[in-house]
Image (cartoon, rainbow, N blue to C red):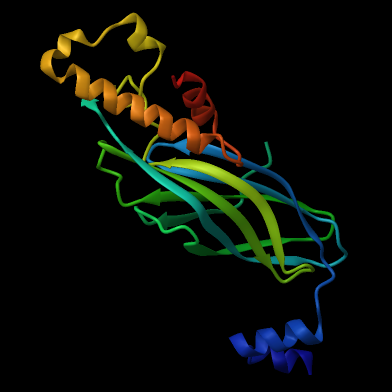
Length: 222
């Protein structure tokens, strides 16, 4: 009977089987790390199955809890990862917007696993604008419970702003190196940089795991 069911499995049949033969696997989040990789932000998720049955990871879900954007003010010249998944976020993003990505991971009893969600937005080629997202991350499985809260993360796309690439924000550098060479534009550029610093300070003070690059940015803001 089981073989016959397996031969004609459908999405509806899968749900029926899940109800008839519920998994006893219990997935727990071991770690959530945020990294920056080129024009993407990476959610590196490690999990462990503490149950007695195999758990199938079905979907990774990210929900936008906060969003903000800054513009450039002045332009100058461990566990092996067993799966990688790309997910695109809108810019701008409405608070409450949810995006998900189907994943294909299985974790046997008392086994650990690690996979990555690569997040990007449409502004890959627009170096004059950076979008900040505060995300709530959830993993859907066939185990118990079905939804596992992975944690909260903050990311910047398509890159973490740096004053090495242009004038993005006010920092100690510009206390030491006045921008008087800008001439008539100095007042407007400095006002823009101060405004960006305040916006990022407020945003990055919220809850969520930050990449090393965002931690360094937060400490550099004045």
